[in-house]
Image (cartoon, rainbow, N blue to C red; front, side, top):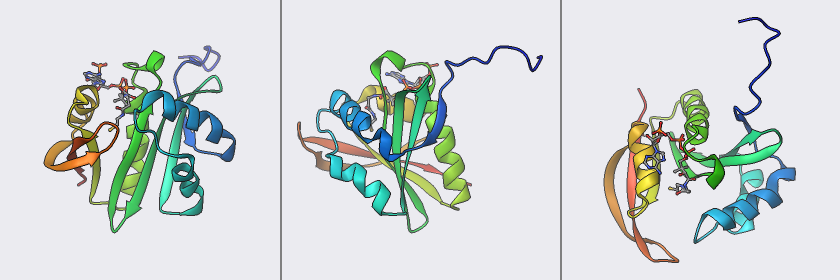
Length: 156
Ligand SMILES: CC(C)(COP(=O)(O)OP(=O)(O)OC[C@H]1O[C@@H](n2cnc3c(N)ncnc32)[C@H](O)[C@@H]1OP(=O)(O)O)[C@@H](O)C(=O)NCCC(=O)NCCS
């Protein structure tokens, strides 16, 4: 392909969270989740070097994000979300690709996550991307109260 070919600007760019994203992120979190993270939880990302957050952006619009924590050689995928209009367009897959790169760079043995047992879409996404069910954590979530499924993807 020629270098002069127009770039597909609708492919999301994955980048690190900045302070300028915080208000939008908070609004999206409230739109997407029934029990959104409070603002202070996102602030923690800037205060604790073990936390990272990635933003998926298309033409300066945030279309998805993910928050990860590296601890004791394991990566915890704490949060991943894509705005409704951008779902099933591989935005989360691209975020996960970057997360995998970071996990490998950090020499993590595995990526762990929790997901609501009723969240069939997210469970299908994780299964499609190599995560396996480990066990159930009873009444892990609030608003509404629900069990969490703990899932893992081991890294070679
Ligand atoms: C789960 C979520 C992050 C997936 O994001 P996404 O960008 O739509 O996912 P992708 O387009 O990268 O999906 C990749 C593959 O995962 C699977 N998948 C994703 N969403 C799915 C769904 N709702 N139902 C079934 N399979 C799904 C499919 O195999 C899909 O490939 P395909 O579209 O070619 O069939 C998104 O639905 C979301 O934000 N949900 C609300 C927030 C949430 O529940 N987050 C998870 C908290 S644990």
